[in-house]
Image (cartoon, rainbow, N blue to C red):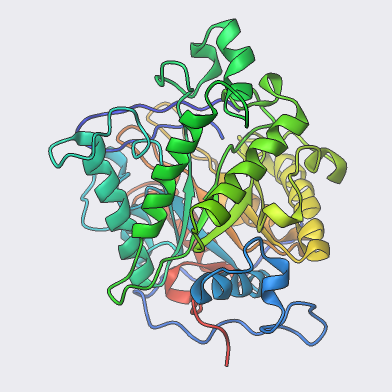
Length: 416
């Protein structure tokens, strides 16, 4: 489903128009963030062990913390899913107070996962000078990721990369027919803009390598390039490249970051939108197990006020992911979702606690994390405390399989 961004100079506001049984043990209050317990522990029949974990990962030279994150995310999916939000430390509904995330205002706990983006970091206008707005956003993004890691949160980054011709948009509708036909192909090895793309990856690599905690330890990040590729709203979409071309670009991206630039604190996520209904559809542009750690899906459409029927459709698609992730020993995730409420769009009763929760838990699926898109001045995906659906969100967040930061185990240490 097509998405739109609105950019203001005062803040980063990503405005997006997207991309069964239930629990009865929810409570209405969530305590403040508390120290986390030990990392999750696997059952005896699980093929993944602390000794063999790297054999299932993209990067055999991944840092210890990145390896632990893969292991713990995989184990977490057996009992819980981490709840996250894009731009949680910067996107606030109705210009709300900025001292804490909207999720924390409503629940008492920060999200378990923070979503960030390379959109402004790799912008052509980022001249890396202190007075440059785009560079300031780069520094803010880095600071937020460090703060999230310090809290024990999981970090993920998407990349709304602007097209290589004028670098003004990532939306295909803003491009000429010729640009749409050639842009993606031009960044492939041997293409006219391949060196341009490598320079963008150099910037991405430099940022990943700057992400260090107070002890100089590299911070793990789930990186999600070329997302929602099965649609054609982005210039890397299905109408503008073949399956083999998409695979080549994804494989090059991983190999260049990992082997050429020596970045070893990344887990790589593959995330189409919700167009598929079979595993073969889902894997039609899959670059291979050697290039993917996380099997994801963005899904707004099935949950766009379609009631239980929509939840069932979304769950069936997540069941495909979950089964593939179990077979391949990968991580499964709902990489984006949400229902955006505005002054003209009312909340859907029980959307969080019934429809979304069923989507994420029915049919014994194993989903490691899910992420809402960002709140903004004129709309929200996660309610603030005064919203009429705040209680519904709190119920969702306290169900058995839900995990905000206050119930997230330690994710960067292997279990002893």
